[in-house]
Amino acid sequence: MKLNAAQQAAVERHKADDERQLANDINAVLATPQGRRLFIAMIFQGGVYTHTRRGDDHTYLAGRRDACLELMSVANEFAADQVLLARKERHDLISARNAELRGLTQKGNDQ
Image (tube, rainbow, N blue to C red):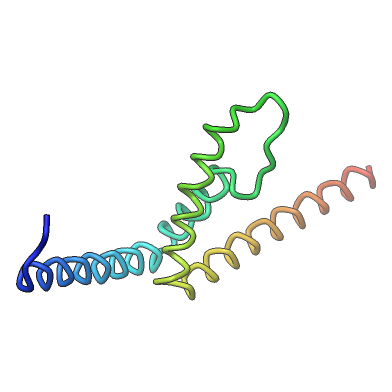
């Protein structure tokens, strides 16, 4: 269907409104610690950093991965600083947990 100039302008305005709302929503969610933890969990559970193996359902895993890559792309576009903070927070948590495990290993070896 061919749109007239007024219809085309409305479609473009709606598209810009949707993109602006998406940016606001992503920033609002990632501004919270809970939102950043959820974002990181979804990326890891979506298999972004996981290799597929023989016997895996490649179509299913590719779909999950693609959805998470799209989420990463949009988050990086609209809230790059929050994405970096989410990754730093996760790194700090893993580092603290690893330090705890090393301490417990050392303590176990001393006994």
